[in-house]
Image (cartoon, rainbow, N blue to C red; front, side, top):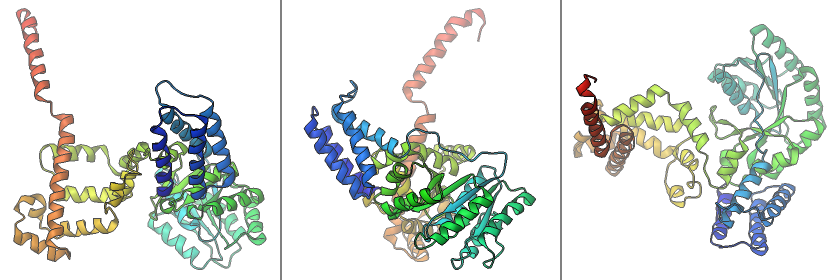
Length: 460
């Protein structure tokens, strides 16, 4: 995500850091490169011009903090203006609780509305809400069946009268069904087209009049760049939208839609689809996204992913096993599955500051294919071999390689990586729980002093 933009902006900022003082000339030169980088990332011309003008006014206006170098100050201004461009520090809108709310999803065919509807339902289900999925797309082949399958996967009811029913009647009937079943979030998956036409717009208007949705959300494919922004603008003019959901943002190497859509439509981006799995839907925070674009990482999102994957009991149990030198391949396999649930190792590393533009990180093979290979090797071990890796002799390693469809070199590499990870984890966890010799001496000295002071009086 944003690889090309990160790389180009990173080069601009490295050049700025090397200057002892900034003049109007070198600021304008740097902003020219920033402008080219944004346009190359398919950011709309209007959004780019607005952004560059604001940065230039502030940078030349001598907003220099004593704690920052001139180059760092420009980076700070760019970061702040990027946040403003994508929505500023406004509170993320939330769906009111306590009563039934309707969310209507709109967009062109192929943007990912049906999958996004299921992701939204899963998101609100985890918050304790009772969602209902409504199959109002009667034109696309298999759209109804797709929504039923997704609803079954996440145990969410689907209202689907059939492909021969008028979409407006389906929307109206879904409200009655939700009232009977006491469901409080109704998510409408409406039909799209290959292009915007009057027939589609008319149908969406009639559905709006019947269900009166709390949110009319435009679903946009982030990989289409400025096209997504232009489509959102037309929907805003003809139907009205309350927010935007960007899909496939994990595959967008340019990021133009994420940066442009708020500036053009005036409506916030509420959610971002970060993968194909049902759980790969994130609340969109402009400040976090701006930090990712500038290669500053997103530690808050990393913490939230970890909290969703680990319970406090799991973390304590793992820490205890590491401290007692009981960490084995069973634990290693569990951690591998947790990493996979959180989006993969590459995704997690990209959230760390400086790792987004780290060329060494990009060259590492951290994909699903490598994880599957590691899992196959571990699953080919016996119970004793998983618990006691030291007993893995040459003949055992050959048997494991044959059983997992890998090579002895692959098995040896995994064993080496396992030992390195084990040492690193023990060192990290152990330093938090094991007092150093200096601390032990200090504590003993305090205890001796306490005894000398209070023992004459019989105090303990």
